[in-house]
Each structure stands twice: as C-alpha cells, then as structure tokens.
Image 1 (tube, helix red, strand yellow):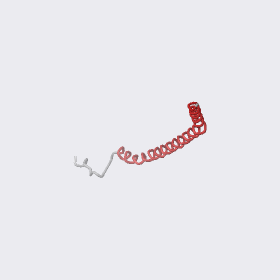
Image 2 (cartoon, one colour):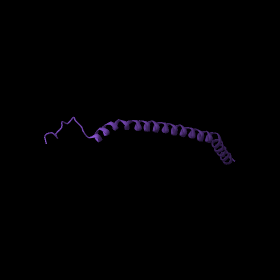
Image 3 (tube, one colour):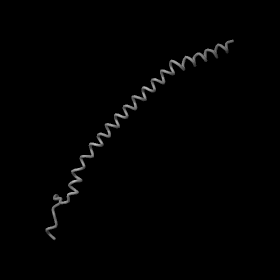
Image 4 (cartoon, one colour):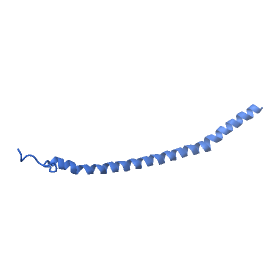
Amino acid sequence: MASEIQPLGIVDDESVLLLTAARPARARPRRLLSILLTILTAQYTIIAICVSLTAAAGLHYVAAPQIVARFEAVIAALKR
C-alpha cells in the first residue's frame, strides 16, 4: 500500500497530460474569432455609413427642393 502513494508532482494518467497539453490550442480559435468579428463589424459600419450618405444625398437633392416648392406654393396661395 505504501508503494501506491506518489508525490503530488508525479502524474501517471495520460488523459491529464493530454488535457494540459491541449489547453493552449483554444487561444487560437478565440483570437481568429475576435479578428473575424472585428472585420465584420468594420464592414457593417462602412456599409451603413455609405447607405446613410446615399439616402441623405437623395433627400437633399430630390426631396428637399420638392418640399420647398410646395411650401412656396402654399405661401403664395395664402398671400392671394
């Protein structure tokens, strides 16, 4: 029975050794996932800005003159 007792630093179980060796490998997928998430967020932000600027330009050059013309027509009608 005394021969079965081992010091704490000695490990005979291979599964424990495999688990300790496999732990650092998880850092790489998390790093790649964070890089991918950053790239996708940047693309989404750039596309959202482009769409917003396009919509604003359309409103500025198309809708705003029509609205101003209608208000001028209403004002001219009220002055008569």
